[in-house]
Image 1 (cartoon, chains in turn blue, red):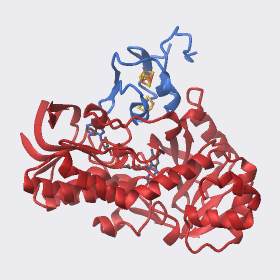
Image 2 (cartoon, rainbow over the protein chains, first blue to last red; image 1 turned 90 degrees about the horizontal axis):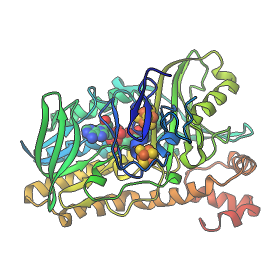
Image 3 (spheres, each protein chain N blue to C red; image 1 turned 180 degrees about the horizontal axis):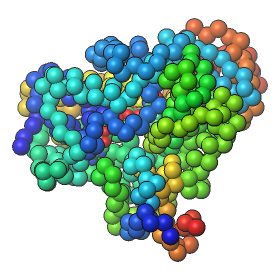
Image 4 (cartoon, rainbow over the protein chains, first blue to last red; image 1 turned 60 degrees about the vertical axis):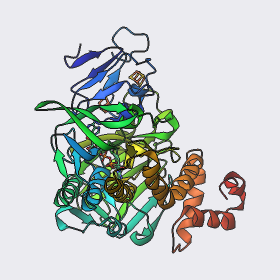
Length: 73
Length: 392
Ligand SMILES: Cc1cc2nc3c(=O)[nH]c(=O)nc-3n(C[C@H](O)[C@H](O)[C@H](O)COP(=O)(O)OP(=O)(O)OC[C@H]3O[C@@H](n4cnc5c(N)ncnc54)[C@H](O)[C@@H]3O)c2cc1C
Ligand code: SF4
Ligand code: SF4
């Protein structure tokens, strides 16, 4: 498993891939993501809609390993 | 700590707002979560020369990377037409160094009297009836700053609106996600900013904005609702680059990612003690995805109204509505029209794009606008008129 993968509650972010661009933050329908310049956190409002994963330009966001919708290899 | 105006975000919208508010006598502070203003860059870096006077920016060689003659629009089959930069819209004419540009605007604001703090992330609002200030994390710990008005100039990732009760959330149709490489060792057309339609960028386009004879920003924007797989955008951009001969052997020296809104104007941008400006207020042009110009134009209006509010010591919604009326008068019609046009454009097939570009290439348009293009379509491509009926 990738070392830089980090569980952020209901989703997973790869800290090495993340560009800290905020595309996911502005897209989240629950306004659940916070980006403190270089560190993503997701709060309990997340409904696992997956939009953050689809919008992420570099593929840094995903469902947690083992989740049926996870695209983590 | 207390200020008349606390601005969240020191991008173009925040800086221009700060400058005009401070110039008008308000006490102003900008809070920026990044440790370095303007960096990392999240932009294609194209701007026009014609609007910068309106917002009091002086052209400065420091932040100009390259100048072009105009825009070149390329259709899926490779046909193209060129538009002189004077009429090519708010994004074409000058390719800038965006980090230096943002820094220059902050310096202007500071010169006008504004304060600024970097590496200071606003994490919430202080509310008591209306909005009364912000809470922020800074290297010196947690800060509470009270304010007459808080300005959300926090860009696409804006949360200030939602925190303050103004819904700025977007539909997946109205989000365009972008990936860009700054490439060197390539041969871009140094005279034009290129917009390449089709080319495997469904519901978006590829842009090649030259930064010199041998380097350019090569990017792709795609509509979120068309993307299913993780990291799909990178796949499409890499694929495009592979087949563009001019980019073969190019080296990537910077990766830029981000997103823009491509929505219709939102219903509300002010409430008691709160005002939104720039990308935070979803003011990006839905066709081009460019937003620096509108962020600055609205920023000037916001700053002027905030200065007036500070003088009257009245930051009520009623007072701030002057700003809302002001920006709508200046920007709303074009934003709405371009949003309608975007909704149409994303449904067109490559073949239809080819046809339209072919006739536009023959025309000598002296003024490029959605309206003018529609007129040409009406005259030259009557078979398409039905498709565009709701726009005409
Ligand atoms: C890939 C890409 C290419 C683009 N190309 C072009 C182009 O060629 N031409 C053009 O005109 N436009 C372009 N745009 C759009 C343009 O970048 C934006 O419209 C413009 O930056 C808007 O300015 P702004 O001041 O509203 O927001 P921003 O420039 O995004 O500034 C917002 C600032 O707020 C800060 N911030 C956010 N949240 C907080 C917080 N909680 N606390 C403190 N600070 C915070 C951010 O760090 C940021 O510095 C592009 C966008 C993208 C993503
Ligand atoms: S969209 Fe992707 S790269 Fe951008 S901040 Fe979110 S996870 Fe990171
Ligand atoms: S899965 Fe949906 S709700 Fe959860 S953080 Fe991502 S975008 Fe927000």
